[in-house]
Image 1 (cartoon, rainbow, N blue to C red):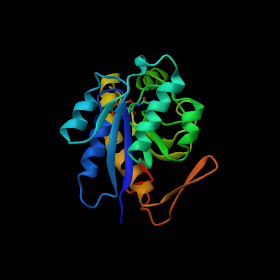
Image 2: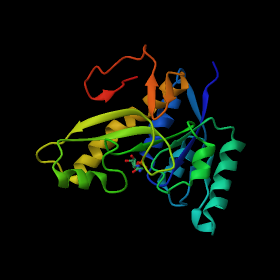
Image 3: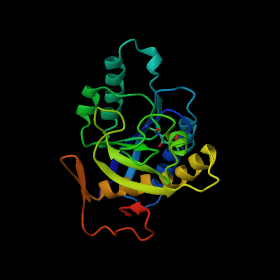
Image 4: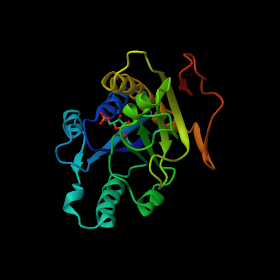
Length: 217
Ligand code: GAR
């Protein structure tokens, strides 16, 4: 079976990209990374991509006066590489409605909160400040509104009594790294279908065994 062609978009460290690189290195994983695009030249994730022998492209948004022209460049790079699914992995620039529309139901994002709570930045600090008992992370299809769209997979993460922002960020990332490859696998195997504002997951996907990740692929 042919593998789903991924384009991964990053802005920074790229630890989620690394999780996808590691997953794609497994022979039976149903997806492969065709291109990694960063909007920042100093993104550490670009080195991760190059170290893995992947095509790594910087399209620096600062080089463009007009967002639409920047997004056209990104779009052309993705189509040049025949990308079938765009994975936003710590890509920290808002994408315009035209771009999002062109990749509707073909672009997913990971966000470090239990959406729809805590959209935007500083999610961990805000959750701690509110005293919530569970933090989390979410993978969702992208819609024009920030951190919004049909939810594919979520992990609820208990907040410990002595939790700090640093510990919560680190803990959340470990779950993100498990969840992103699992969500991409689900899509690549045709087991996730968008229906309105929801994602229907095919019945033969195992439901949570540990009570946290839902659904656990
Ligand atoms: C991750 O925590 C990801 O969920 C978050 O940025 C971090 C990137 O880390 N994304 C967002 O906040 C998007 N709204 P990484 O570069 O090490 O993968």
